[in-house]
Image (cartoon, rainbow, N blue to C red):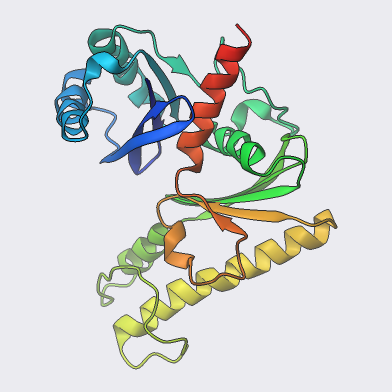
Length: 261
């Protein structure tokens, strides 16, 4: 079995695969100080709850945008699973797709992995992957899967946190879809929610529209990331929502490597 690990700025996601089948997934807050032993205590319990044993894991692949977290995850693989972890984007795990941008080395591992997964689900099409995480990223890839560039914007929660931090009298609220489509709030909380939620929808509409206009061809829009489901009612924005796109991309990357060795 393959253990795929995707470390983002806010959360680290772990998934267990058998071939192309995703068997189980778990999430933990990202902490670059967390040791291999701490990971294993947490992960071992979750594996057992799902009916699996760590002895069944014979491969580990990691994608991370938090470099300091990598060492302890590599140690986790060696110490508790008896394997050397593969690291996405590092030899011998090259991307397998072209990164046609001015600075290929600066492309985040998660964004390249998303492009790989998008090619697997929508081959032969121009694709836009929108990932709702700490930052919201919009990544364009071509019919052959090549990564062609994109956009980075503040994430939904980051925008809300900045608003609360900068305005002393504004309360902390949980981000959710407003109860009604009205954009006239009657309370401070509802006005904040409208501003963040509908403001974000408007930003997505604008950015997607501008990108489609610039590309000048049909574009398949795929949403992913922890907050993607927040916007699932806005069906006009996306062609499909794939919550596990990055984890599936790691699985495809691992399987592609195995097929070439």
